Length: 189
Image (cartoon, rainbow, N blue to C red; front, top):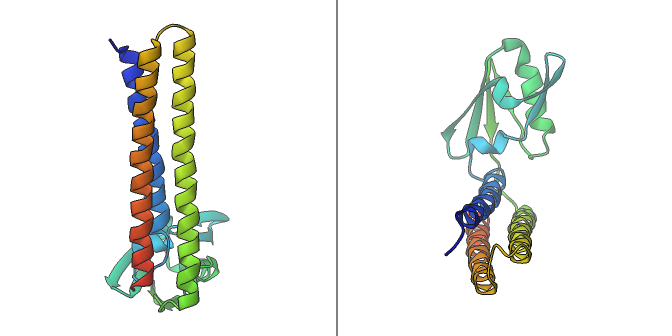
């Protein structure tokens, strides 16, 4: 009979692995693929009101066309600062102000830039795999502790170790699938 605490621990391991996968998807959404996405401007920081602020705190980002972003700046005095923040964010974007609306055209990707993006996506995927493996290691260490305390039998320890490995393999597979999807998206735009 499996201890309810152990079942709760397994659910926690799954939740933590899911968190690594969600983080990877968030990282991928920030990678510019040639198509306009509101998430593209997430890393933009703007010098405003004496401190650094996220762009989302200063205006609304819109996607009126597949290759164009717009930022409706709420405070007219912040337009230049927002424009500078977008330009200086290292995203290769060249914003143009039109009153309180800033237009941000998304340029075509060169083959060299596509390869660079794939390398970055690969790095993100590897970090997610490492994170999932660290969660697995924590789970296995926890099982060893339960075995030493005689909370688990040898058989239960063995079976639960196999279950943790299956969950790990499942999440690594999902990470690989996400990476291959992103790679295809980058190459075929």
